[in-house]
Length: 323
Image (tube, rainbow, N blue to C red):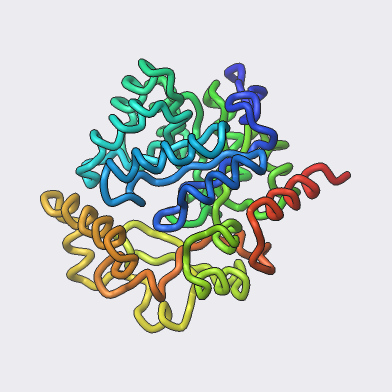
């Protein structure tokens, strides 16, 4: 068994008060949410693809820096479906964000260039095999995406994934998924996590830019109402099982599945999904729309009202510290 570095928790790594990353949420996370997260003593990240251009991404980073001094990160899709990856990475490094979270591809280039600028890189992983690979590439921490995560979830429970990663790897493990309360944060830490990444409970915040209907759905629905769909990107993704989702179904039709299996067309299909989603918050893929299909994870079970981010974090801290 390797000597584990999880004793270096997220607070020590980033200089924050509470070991929580407000997870990067596609089409949800924005500067206002990050500023309030930092003011509350946690950190957060924004998907680069939430911005239409690298100029907008740069402006957002500078806007956050002008308002608060705490750490924050940017989430990069590092596979071939993201045609803007290299330009986005350049902006992140020029602006010296505190950390980058890589998803859906090899982080090798990101790690190499980021470390030259003193920027940390945390890598999404779903199993030990991938974790060992990214640790060998020099990743600073692992984002352990388990099957309880919102959005694109993994296939392994946190009870199994966290111990497996802390045993196999010597870099900190940040657990992503299955966390909606302070007690659950404590459970992850007790299993060996250095911190947690959590997003769904922040969708129903006053600062979130999404519609009141989306926020209300997070209040009114619970864990039992979360289902997996491949309608959004071809990759299984968790959504709230609204009447509309029930109507359109959660599985791609035969033609959509065929396109996603075609090696030559796959990256173009996935790229089309991202572009459509960013342009108008309407069609994220094929026949589904983000107006009536809402991404969320089972942790919305803990959402009972729409509140300020500061109030959400304060409750998490109270629950975490309760005897």
